[in-house]
Length: 237
Ligand code: 5RP
Image 1 (tube, rainbow, N blue to C red):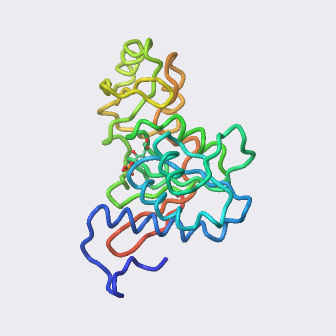
Image 2: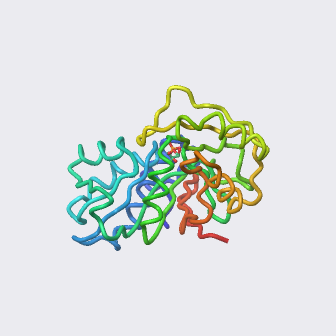
């Protein structure tokens, strides 16, 4: 993939927003050959996804429409003239593009910093291909420095928190946040996640958990990673 350049000069120092823009542009370039008038694109949530949405809008005539993983993304897409479909009215999503809070080299992810993890996981499950877009700060050796978001049914919040302590984490209630599904978020600190697939299943087995922000059983297929030397394409090890 071509390095991100301005006036043909590779930029050694880039702001995080410039990196996000570069990876959003690379993602659009990556999916363009997959688009036709019937294509449905899955669209994620967050600041990197917003850059992607703004780039995607420029190509809205090339595909049918989108399924969005949050009300915020749906709103941004609609404002840009892009069709947004209810997932239940769609047979197939060709490709899903979304950011992440952390990724390891196996493209296991932590997501949910924007509290949209459940819808993100549902759209991921329905998509043929999952392209994660991120700047280089998100690539880590071991997941868990970023607190793991868990969406919980409100009445189960304290019970789930006690169960998470038994798993070795320090859950903190994300006060004032209600998800698009009407639920609460616990952010779990101090987990060194050496087996993301197992931890994802263990946490999801706690009664009252809607889902957790580990995307490991279904990881990303491709990670487009923005660096000052260009956007790198990584596939799972
Ligand atoms: C939202 C998410 C986002 O993809 C994640 O938080 C990354 O966001 P950003 O691109 O703003 O860093 O999972 O629930």
